[in-house]
Image (tube, rainbow, N blue to C red):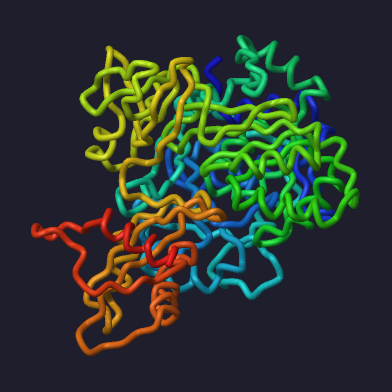
Amino acid sequence: MDWNLADLFELVADTVPDRLALAHGVDGPTRSWREFDCNANALAAHLAREHRPGDKLALYAYNRPEFVESLSGALKARLVPVNVNYRYREEELVYLLDNADATAVVYEAEFADRVGKVRDRLPRVREWIEIEDGGAGNGFAIPYREIVGAGSDRRLDVRRSPTDLLFMYTGGTTGMPKGVMWEHRALYAALGGGGNAVIGEKASESVEQQRSRVAEPARAQRLLPACPLMHGTGLFTAINALGGGGAIVTLQGRSLDAEELWSTVEARGANATAIVGDAFAKPMLRALQENPRRWDLSKFFLVVSSGVIFSPQVKRGLLEQLPHLLLYDSFGSSEAVGFGTELTTKDSSVQLAKFRIGPNCKVFAPDGREVAPGSDEPGFIARAGPIPLGYYKDEKKTAETFKTYQGRRWSIPGDWCTVNSDGTLNLLGRGSVCINTAGEKVYPEEIEEALKTHASVADAIVVGVPDEKWGEAVTGVVLLEAGRRASEEELRRHVRERLAGYKTPKRIVFAEVVLRAPNGKADYKGAKRLAMEVREA
C-alpha cells in the first residue's frame, strides 16, 4: 500500500473514534481519536485558506498533544511539516526556518521572546501560531486555541498524494542542519507499512487489512516518546504508533524525569516507550532500582531505542527489574530507517553494537564493492527500497549520500560497519567527524567558530570523546592567545550564550601547540587523542 499519512490517520479515526489518541502527563488533557481528528480538521481548514499545498509548516514545541495535532493538520492540508529543534538560539532558528522556506510556524508561548526577536528576519513566514501555555505571548501571533476552537467534523475536500512530503531536519555531517525529504509512502513503508517490525510481520496489503489491524485492541500501541518528537526517533515511532491505531502519551516535564516517566506509564497504561540509548535508559533504570515495586508496570512491555548505543549492562539491568520487557535496539538515521535491529529479552545474550541487518540493506566499501561477510573489511551501511528523495535544496550533499550501486539507489549516511560471517553487523561509528551526543548530531566547525570568537582563543578544535552517559561528549581543544588567560567554565559559558545548550562542550582541554596539518586542516585525531589523555590523567 502507498499511504498518505493524513489518509491513514483519518482511516484510524473512522475505525476507532472513541479510542484514546493523545494524553498529556499523569492527569493532563486527553483526546480520543474523534477529538484528535476534529482538532486537526479545524487547523487544516485554516491552513488551507492561508497557504498552498507544498508550503512548509514548522513545528517549534515540546512534546505535547498540540504538536501531534499540528502535524496532522499540516498533513491534512498538504503542507510539509518541518521539525524545529526547540534548543536552538536565534541564529540557528533563523537559519533553519529560512532554509526550509517556512510560511507558517506553530510555536508555544515559552518561545515567544525568541520568536519576537527573529520575526522581522523571516519575511517568508506569513503566519505565527502560538500555543498558549500561561506565559506572555506575542501580539502578532494567532492563538492556537482560537483556530482549533471546539474542533470540526468537516474534513477538507482535497485529494492527497502518497508523494506528499515530510521534512526531517538533521544536524547530519555538513555543519548546518539539512532537511531530509521523505515522501509519505516511503516513510510509512520504511516504518513497516502497517505491519509489525518487532515481530517481522509484513506490511498491510490493502485498506481492508489495515482497517482490520487497526480495529484489534490488542495491537494498539500506547507509546510514550521519552525523546523529543522534534527528532527522528520520537517522530517516526509516533507516526508508526498512530498509523496502527495507537495513542501518543507525552510527558509534562521539559526534560527527562524518570520518576515522572514511570508514573505516567502507570497512569496512562502506556505499553511502550521510545528512547535514545543510555542517556535515557540509565536514569530510567536508576528510578526502578531506587523505588522497588512503586509502579504497576505490568502493561508495559516494549522499549524502542535508536540514535546512540544502548549498552549491554543497562539492558541487563532493565530486564532484571522488568523481566517481561522486550528491548528493540534500532540502528538507523533520519536518512534511512531500518539498517539493523537487535532484539533483547531476559533469555537473550547481549552484545555491544551488534545488529541483525535489515531488509534491503548491504555494506559497501568506499569504492562501491559489496563487503563480504566475515572479511573484517569495514564499509558503509546502505539501504535501498523506501528511502528519502534527498536533502532539501542541497544537490551536492544529496549526491554524496544517495548513490547508485548494483543498479539500485541507496541511502548511505556514513556509518561504518563490518559484516560477520552470519550476516550480522558490528557498528563501528560514523566515519566523519560528526559528534553524536545523546542522539543530537553536532558538527565541530560550528562550535569551533563560536569558541574562536572569544578574545583569548587563538584556535580551537572540537571532538567527540567516548562517554558512558552521552555516547560522545563534546570536547573543545583550545589554544590560547599568547599572554591571554581564560578558564574552562568561561569558555563553556561563551559557547552556551551563542549556541544550543547541547552543543556546549562538556570539557575544555588546553593545548600548547596548534593541532593542525601544514595545509591548515584540523588534526582531529590528534585533538581527540589529547582530549582522552587529559581525561584519563
